[in-house]
Amino acid sequence: MDWIDEYNFIVGTYESFIIGYKFNHETREFTLAFTDEAHSGSVRALATGGKYLLSSGSDENIKIYNLRNNKEFGSLHHSEGLVRSMVFFDSRYLFTASDDHNLYVLKTGSWKLEKTLFKHQSPVTDVSIHPSGKLALSIGDDQKLVTWNLIKGRSAYITNLRERPDLVKWSPKGDHYFVGFCKHIDIYSVETTEILYSLQVSGRS
Image 1 (tube, rainbow, N blue to C red):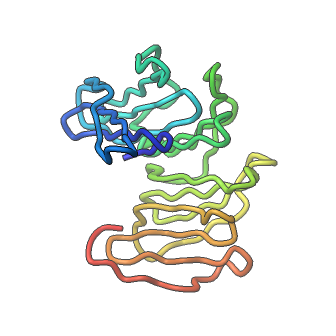
Image 2: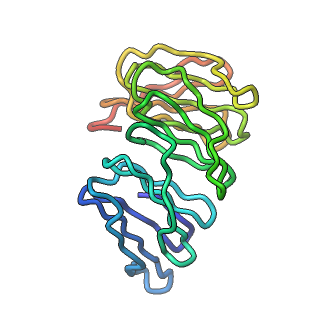
């Protein structure tokens, strides 16, 4: 599920559809805004930035939609594998994490490939951008957490994790980050890079 603004949200399904809803604050009800059979397999990732919605599927295709008219108008072919995670920064750049072991940075609108970041030795499963836009975090099936210096366009630090992570996210202020695993979520301090808290969860984080 991905929030678009205070009135809309979009879900991707295992049955290949993306479905958009609008929320009416007065009636407190959702109404169907659009549906599209975006892929020939399950939807694996969604990302929104400005007027754009991107959908990545298990068919290894990435579809581009214009949210102003809810129409598809293109696709991306920069990756050689399944894209598992996508995130916009400031609606100007798109970051994608791929099964081909790479992170890709594309310019929004022109969709020109600006940078390929390589450090993982296995599929990259999630990526998160620091609120300043100067740092990024990525995780992969190689059980590595990579800190990226986006100013220099290279890795700054690699942390070896004890198990395979499922997700990584920066806090809103960028002074902490979170790494989620199957049964727990670890909260790190940026200043010390040490775990401050570990929260146990009953299912996948």
